[in-house]
Each structure stands twice: as structure tokens, then as C-alpha cells.
Length: 178
Image 1 (cartoon, one colour):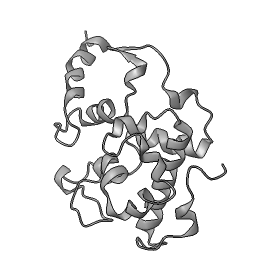
Image 2 (cartoon, rainbow, N blue to C red; image 1 turned 90 degrees about the horizontal axis):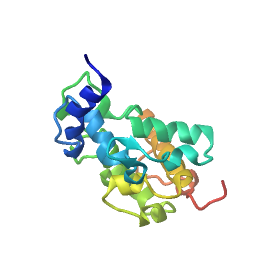
Image 3 (cartoon, rainbow, N blue to C red; image 1 turned 135 degrees about the vertical axis):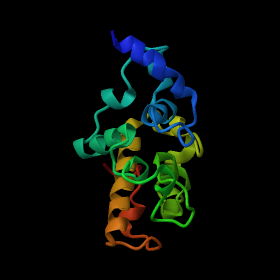
Image 4 (cartoon, rainbow, N blue to C red; image 1 turned 30 degrees about the vertical axis):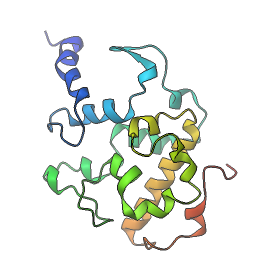
């Protein structure tokens, strides 16, 4: 008798842990609950309204990036289970921190110029709370930013751009014409 409610009851306490220190078993669930779950859309274990990113019209390529980011399938080092957890550090900065969603949004020095450029206004909601950041009312703007950041990361890792070089595309902000 392995009903969903039994499994859920065992895993749910993990949502109260900090994702970076949570045990590996259930870490993805902890990360989702702490950083991505919209508190306004849930009452206990029940969904009371759809997440804003589901009901907002967002271009396909941007919503795809947003959903991958939210679900932990965007190829960040923290999701590479072939290496020990403590070795999943960011390859783009010298901070020696695990490359996870929180790191690339708030901490990584490789993205510092983006955070202080035309994208700075997206940080008005929060500069340290990933849950508040991810659940901003303007989900199209969040999706566009996440898509831009993941694309920028991909180009950095491929060596097609240099971290310190700010191009015209890098300065494209969420306030520019869509």
C-alpha cells in the first residue's frame, strides 16, 4: 500500500530544510518547495490556484527555460549526480560555491554585470529570497530573464563570449521591446 499520500507525508517535512544543506535524498523536492513553490497557490498539500507562470502568455522558448529552471533540469552543476555533491561548484567564478539556482541568480560574479545593468529592475522584489524572486507577479519578465541568463551561461561555457565583456545583447533588459 504505497499510496501517494503516504509517500508525500514522508517527503513533505523536507520542504522546511535549506536546499544547500538538505540530505541528497529529497534534495530536489526541498529545492522546489523552498525556492520555486508559489505560497499563494497552495493551502497545505492542496493546489488552490494555478501558478502565475502557467496562466501567463510567455513565448515558448522562454517558458521552456523557466520550467527547466524551476524543475531542476537546466544542466546546472548541482544537478550532475555523477560527481560528489561538494564538487558541483560553479566553473564560471572563483567563489567555490555549488552552482545552483540561487548561485546564478544572486551570487555568481560572472553575472554581476547583468544584475547591475538593464536587468537591475528585476531585483526590486528581492535580492536574496529566491522564492520571492521566482514568484514575482510579472512571470513573463522572470521567464525572459531566466532564459537570457541560461543562454548567457551556455555561451560562457562554450567560450563564445568572455565574462568581462558586456555586449549589446547582454544589456538587453526586460524593459526593452519584446
